[in-house]
Length: 400
Image (cartoon, rainbow, N blue to C red; front, top):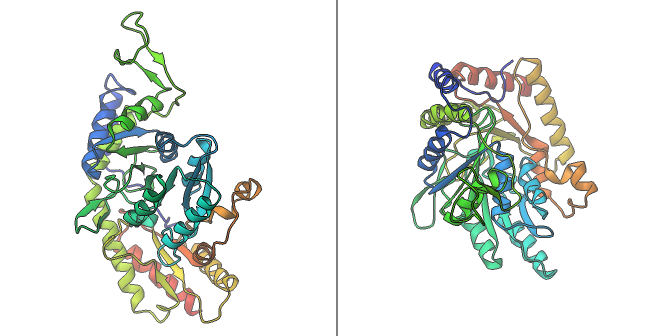
């Protein structure tokens, strides 16, 4: 079975982990800081805080952004649920925002309308969480402009985009996760992401005060900094000065992450080559108008965490009809030994959000996107022949 995603672990990755296992440090040692330094190099951000998962990163970023009980936050309706749940973890109330079905990115007109509706109710959003969907960076400058009008912080959910860049309005090339146009960014190192630590994540920021706060939140809210202690009772002394969490990443995981980080450029280049091969092969097919890749803005070249194709609705075709076509292709691929995936079920459809009253509103873009989306196999270990096989099977299924 050819999966939609898979880690690429090589001998030097294994050697790095074994070396760490034989060292004095399995956790809370020097490998963590070294990995964080590597993440700063990869993203261009001043500070990075490694944590136990991308979800933990989102939670701590929301706290560092000031989200507290009753506060409001906004995020994309097409994302993994953690992008919205992080606002809830901090006690806030998320508002889901519709997307552009051709890109999967949050719709700026829909975002502005959502912010305006909140303002009419006297609610000032505390945070906005744009999602770099499938590997290309969202319009962070557009989001920042809207956020600035209401004084909201911006957290870039860059779980899909490590290694991607975009060209901003000044003409500068900016790295995903750099926090050039945001207050925070989060990364994920799950096995299907660009680099992996098994499970793991990180928050990046350029704010020194926020960085120090994140370090404490990561470790139970505890500090040993003599300048911050209320009293000193000996060299062993520490104080819990706020409510924090056990969100640490181990040195063993960071050893793997460091080894993987050195390969990011190669991994992204391979993903882009695979995507180009898919696009070239699909463009010559008779079904090219019915089945299209997500649109990737020229100024935001994708790092291709995912290779998403969409069933394009025919004239007058219903959403239900598109969804049936997607299901038939999904089932057909699995029968042929290819395992596609669907990213993502819109958050507003999740029972917990419906039952909690968090799914109000209209999401025509998200519903249209979801009806036709399918993620094809995309990972650095794939061979060109794997792409050719997928294209051939898709062509055969659509022709039958």
